[in-house]
Structures are given as structure tokens and as C-alpha cells.
Image (cartoon, rainbow, N blue to C red; front, side, top):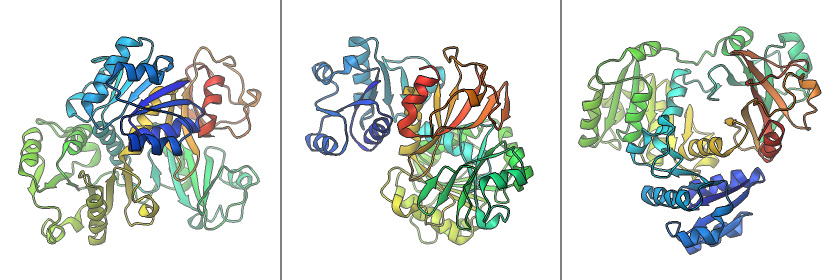
Length: 458
């Protein structure tokens, strides 16, 4: 598969790296000469210097041979215009455009092509969905968002689970039961995929995968999960906040959708009166507070320490990190900070912030879900490793429908973690059969995505 990417900024370069790791043929088109040279020096792909809004540039770059054209420059207009040119000139090439204008966020759920763009990806809309899922799933640091509602990925410290330390994986599953799987273990800085003989150490962090009710039964409910709470504070009143409020089910006339969360009081704090006025007009039952976020008295005057959840969602990632840290220091039960790039990645996981959401990672995941074949979705990318948890839907082109897993002769390194058949989730064994329309989960290395596509019906 050949994929053309317009724009070698943070998002474009991340997508390129991911696709190169999957052994795709990648073409990058970049207007800035120094950026183009830097990318050419650091990535194993073709880099073409030129203007993506010029048809001659697109032709010279070889877009005609691509299956997908992804426009992710910093300009909505450039992204949409270039996709329109590609659609008109190379009708077989599918197009994706990043667009920050909130107007375009509404087109995602229609599934319709607009202005020659097959898929419009809005960063704020994608991020709002991700944060809403985290809230509805309890904002627990132990529970990892994997998109699939029927599956939960939970991370536990082995020192807190005496049934693990000093025992092999086979012994643990024999003692506790077969209704869950341990697809990965974090040991120091290294992520390991354990076999039956793997022995757990006290400092290991183990990833558990299974149905939420099964994990609760076997390991107890996550003590830190906030299924219902009384107060939610949001720092920042920009587009992301409005989209998140919509995702939580709030509109101008009702707040019944929040009953699942305990009908919490929601407060939005920002120093911009115009932003707050717009939020108040759309969500009249939300408390809007005009207060500068860098005011030294903010935490005390707004009683942030007594909040159940504090979301730091401004457009400044440094302020988001500091806001979440200060809220946690004051006593907030859960804090979440939005970051937009990897500037602080070396220190983020050592900070006292419960959850970090990286907009760039959310966006790249959404785009990769679109371009991958065989109905593949990335459910979770393990931090600082080459492993992913992915989900595949079995299609009619899969030659071994109805076969047992042990007869599939999967390549070494493939681990099937769950099978969802007719709405029911199964922890697979060698005798589990795979049928058409089943959803199966796998732990694989990114470079193996191409093999998965070939095997399961690309």
C-alpha cells in the first residue's frame, strides 16, 4: 500500500513513522525546504518538496500511485483544497483531511464525502470523544481506554497482587481461572509479551484484559473508579470543551444523560468572557466562571481541591500540565491534562497527574484506523513500545472461517487476546473457532500489520 501525506509537521511525521513501521510505502509532500530536508534525513520514505495545492506538485510526487492521500498541514483550506484536487485528478485515490474548524466536526458522523474529501478528521472532536469515554469509564488510572465497550484493559502493580509475584503465567491462570488474559507486562522500561513460563516479579506492572464484570469478579472492582461523582471542573472554554459537553449528552434543554454519572455539577473556568458567553448560551445549566487561569488565588477561590474531576483542556499544554498538577496538589480526586505533542513525554509519566491525553496520538490513531485494511482498528498503543492491541472484523474473504485458532498456524509473535462472537466476549483457547463477522483482538508489533491484513482479508 502506498500512502501520500501532505505536511511534515508533528502529525504528518508521526503518521509517517507509524506507517513506515508497518512497512508501507510513504510519500511526504512538504512545502518548507528545511522541514523537507529534516524529514528526508530522519525517515525512510520519499520526500517531495512542493506546494500541495499545485496539481503539478501532486503529479510529480506520484500521488496517482497512492491508495490514500492524507492532508494534515496546519491550514484547513490547504488540506481541503489539496484533497479536492486529488479527487478530481486521481479518482481512485481516497482522501483524508485534518480540519480544525468546528463546522467540519459535524460531517464525521454523516459518512458522506464533502468537497472531495472522503474523511474529515477534526482534532477537537476526536479528542472530545476520547475524553468522554474516559469519564464514562470511571477516570481510573488503572483502567485503560480501548474504545471497545465490551472489553477492558486494566493495569495492576504485581506488588499489590500477591497471587502473581514469583509465579509463572501458567500458574497464575491455573490458580485464578482462564477467563482473562495477560497480554503484556511492563518491566522497568521494557514491555514484554509473556508466555506460559514467564515468572512475575514484584516490580512488574501487568496488563489484564477481559470483560469488566469478569475482571471485577476475579480481581475486585477498581477502587479508584469514579462511576458517579458530584463535581466536574473544566479549565478552558474553547471548542474542545463545548464538544466534550455534547459528548457527555448535555444540551440546552436536558441533562438527563448525565444521570449515569450522578448528575454532577459542572463548572467551566476561563478568562475569556466571549468564550464563556457562548458556552452559557448553549449549555445554560453549566456554571461558567470568568477567572484568569494563571491567577495565584484561583485554586482557593474556586475551591478546586474539593472537585471530584478536574480537566485541564486549554490550548496551552504547559498550562494544562501545571493546572492538573496544582489541582491534584490541592486535593482534587482525579485530574486529566491535555497535551498536544511529545515535548514533555520524558517526564509526563512521573508526574502526579492521573490521566494524560495526547491530541496528536488520538489523531494519528483515528487516521490509521481509516487507512488500514481488513477492518482493523487500533484499540491501544502501549507506551514506549512497538506493540499494539488491535481489533479486526472477520470478513468473507478470510479463508479459514469456522476453523479453530490452533489450526490457523498464526505467525510467531501473534497473540489473539479476545473473540467477540454474536455480541458475547470470549477469552480464546486453542479450540476457539473464528467465524465471519467476529471481532478478534490481537497483540502484535506494528511492523506486522501488513501480515495481519494479508491473513484476514485485505
